[in-house]
Length: 258
Length: 333
Ligand SMILES: [Fe+2]
Ligand SMILES: [Fe+2]
Image (cartoon, rainbow over the protein chains, first blue to last red):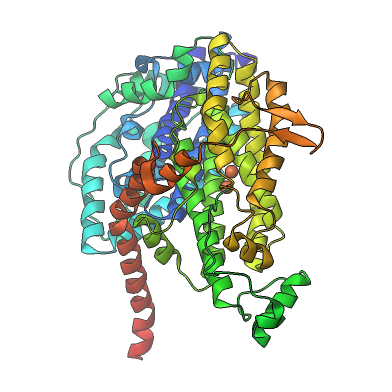
């Protein structure tokens, strides 16, 4: 199926698609944990909607990953039958939900990366990638609008909401650097014109984050440390539990049709 | 159904002659099939009964997120996960429409939620049962949404305009839910031995609680008679339960599953099935707070509300600051 782009390193392409799909899958999983437990009914609906969008995008990314891989697997096989070491999501998306402020800040920091990433992918040399990005970009533009707006309102709300949002930001900040780190498969994607250099997204991400944090009266953390490892399959302890939950039925009843 | 045993404050039904001129004009409008709208005159008992019924219905929608939400993270495929997320999101949306309908009767959502959280208002008994396997998600869609539809289809004809219109919107989505639930059951019933056993077990556990959703027989209830005179209720509990059984028996047969009732049989004379009553002692135990999951369900809602207080306060504080900033420069000029 990669005939259209013969000189693309297939393994690198699968790696890239898996990273995209695992990010949306694991974040969608985390957000879906809120179902029925949100602070107001409107947020129950909005969080379910965000999770639903992310799971829908996962179906596209992992579906294409399986197609490019050409090993007879499908999106479900990738989601449900890989162990943690084969997952390629960034550590940020597997962070626990924490309080609502943590969840919204994690969402905002991710959305602010996700949107420019998808905008760049709309111009991908691979039309399948461009098509998925074009579908997802509308949803993600809305996610960013919503998460940014909530960061502003809660950051500049009461003393308590401000303190909670600042604590969430300080806690999550060191997990953002991984979004912009590149390795050999990223370089192969850049060379093939399929995806942008992750580092090239950092300036626009930071501009968005600064603007929102300023309006939210929140302080950009001084730390420059970056936790990393998820992109190459070295995860936090949390991912194993996410997968134990998510993959339970497929593991307990191998081969069953649901 | 999602509203069970709603009281009306009536001790007996008034005749038209006993009514005040306003009450009589109101009753005659209802008898003609007219819809009552929020700003129009209505008897206090009508308003209060509707608040109880619509409020209980709204609470059921939002508490109903929990037993199904229990399986979202464990849904067996991405497609099933997406369908379940969309369904639970719909249920929250139903809660929203219904709280809005209740608000037109002069009670705020926060007031209703306070009554739920303090245990003064109830939600449907069915949501106090656990979802133990994936088949339960199928059974809930098939039986629980099925029973809800049975109730809500007739409520589209209810006399209160906003409630009736909310029901029309909700019914469309509920029939999707039922089909999706039945689809899960079909896959399980046609699957491996383990899956078929799970499907049968889910039917065994959800059958009688689903029959309880309609409430105990109300053919002699004064509250029910008053609600029916006001067209807040259109059918008796027994009528709806009978329809539900008659609809569900062939569906179970098609799945190759057995309804857990040895007395279940077709009765040619009445043109419907004979079936066993659920254990009403269990029903009253569940209503009294002693169902298998009452503590978890209400506890989860109260915790969500309490944990979310800082968020709601923060949003209000921000809105006030933003309003002050907007009016600030104007006031200074
Ligand atoms: Fe509903
Ligand atoms: Fe439903």
